[in-house]
Length: 318
Ligand SMILES: NC(=O)c1ccc[n+]([C@@H]2O[C@H](COP(=O)([O-])OP(=O)(O)OC[C@H]3O[C@@H](n4cnc5c(N)ncnc54)[C@H](O)[C@@H]3O)[C@@H](O)[C@H]2O)c1
Image (tube, rainbow, N blue to C red):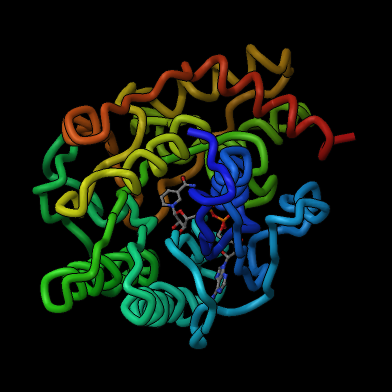
């Protein structure tokens, strides 16, 4: 619903110069809110928000969430954290600090302001799951000392903090567990499967396939995901989550590669490599809670989302 001067909110988005944060900000500004975007530009990019600088309702602050922040806002979306394995493994200590100290700082801010706060958690809290598809009441199977642990355990600890602030201090929290999401403004070199495959296909390079390609993933288009964020934030105060937000349609990695090759008209072939450590074999959300509490489900099919994403990536190839 469009906001007018009286109903307009001032909203903080951390990680707002990133892939998902910048889309969330587009949606918040479109409906008439004011946005304070906080980002240290570790994986985010100025180009993701450059179209917003002439908007008087948009403000950018270069800031690391590991340090306290004092701003006056009505709502907080906490997205700051590198999301792709090559980025979060680049400086694992900083990754854990961003999730944990960042959560403490943002929760402290929300407590001072008595405002509701959203956390971008992840399907990685389920680790290599024994339950399939994953429901929110599954506690996960996570290696606490592996190379992915800085991200997985950092996000798990952030969830703990969110629920303790909720129980102990009565803070209104909204925790979303995000599954693989793709779309325009993904970092072209972030090493995630969709961006990897598209860039390799557009360059007619061999497509890197870890394992035999039979591991499955579900892919959610970014517009669907952001719609889920907004709906979760608008739920009644007792809906804290966690809520899985993702696309339950499951594809093997080999199917994804073949679709990308077909849509790009590429001459790429498949290049099989060993599976990396702790790479889960299956990942698929059960979204019954999102359907029930948010009236939400994804609408964009993989083929359509890939076509839009491929168009975006073409600019990075020529
Ligand atoms: N994209 C996905 O498929 C996916 C899946 C699960 C969870 N998530 C979560 O969603 C959020 C956004 O992910 P994304 O895909 O947009 O990733 P992204 O890397 O594009 O965005 C993360 C943003 O956070 C910023 N950031 C990192 N550390 C920071 C710090 N210490 N202080 C301030 N800013 C910092 C980065 O510069 C970047 O702009 C992340 O929290 C991520 O864990 C994403």
